[in-house]
Image (spheres, rainbow, N blue to C red):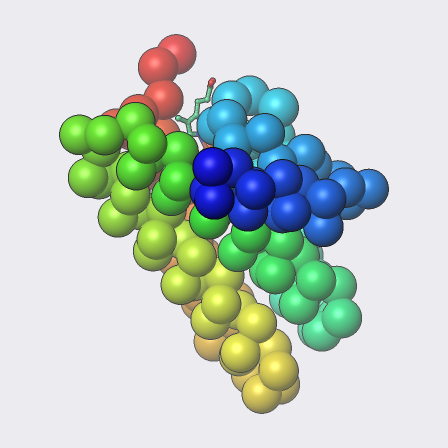
Length: 126
Ligand code: HEC
């Protein structure tokens, strides 16, 4: 119950933002992840700190949903690990951009791109 309330609160906070906190890692959710990731990556290239920070914060939230998803799913250690890594890399983008270190932000973004692929190799069926 407590968890559900927290989830509703999160959904309320995020209402009006680009994605809805459904808790499901599905195609719509992932397309939002991809759009946000691409936007962050190009903002880093343009040294647009404001956009890069907003997008990376959004990615942190989305990957928290992904962690929840794999924790609930159970027996998905790799999914939990990779989504936690993705949160950490999103945070790294925020902190490096704040330090005006766009080279490190670009490196974190590239690493995040690899984490996407690693997880897809394990969990995404085509
Ligand atoms: C921890 C696991 C995990 C991580 C990390 C992850 N994804 Fe995904 N992704 C998935 C799964 C699972 C699917 C399949 C979802 C489905 O089809 O229901 C998917 C599907 C996708 C799709 C296909 C959606 C479609 O139209 O079918 C895109 C695009 C995508 N992810 C982008 C990304 C990007 C960009 C990142 C990194 C910034 C990322 N993902 C990180 C698990 C992950």
